[in-house]
Amino acid sequence: LLADGGGALSSTADELAGSLFGASLFPWLAMLYWLKHPTVGAPPGVTFGLTFLLAFVFGSIPAAIGAGALFGVSLADADWLHGSAESLLAITNCVVVFGFRDAIDVEEKG
Image (tube, rainbow, N blue to C red; front, side, top):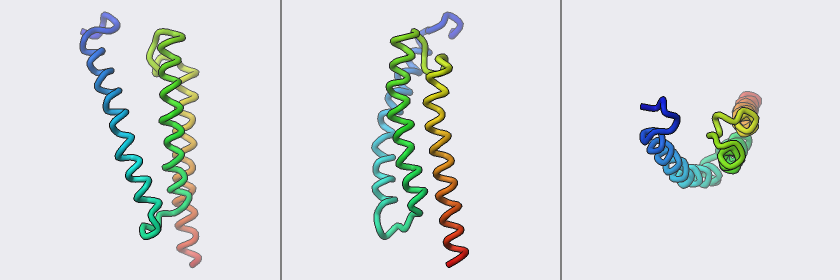
C-alpha cells in the first residue's frame, strides 16, 4: 500500500501528524508556565532546557517546509536539514541533564 511512494494512507498519516504536532504546543506551553511558577521550585537549568526545546520545534517547522519546497521530500529524507533540526534536540537533552545534575549537586552540598 505504501510502496507507491505516497498513497492515501501515507497522506492521512502526514495530516494527522501535523495536527498532533500543532496541538501539542499548547500543553507544552502550559507545562512551561507551571514549571516557572515560584511555588514549583523547578531547577533553573531544567526549566531553561525544556524551554529551549521550543527552538527545536520552531527550527523543525521551517526545515520541514524547506525539505518539501526545495527537495520535494519529507524532513526525515533531507539528511542535512534533518540533522540540523535534530541537533537542537540533542542540545536540549544536554541542557536538561546538566540542569538536573546541577540541582543534585546543590542539594547534596546544601
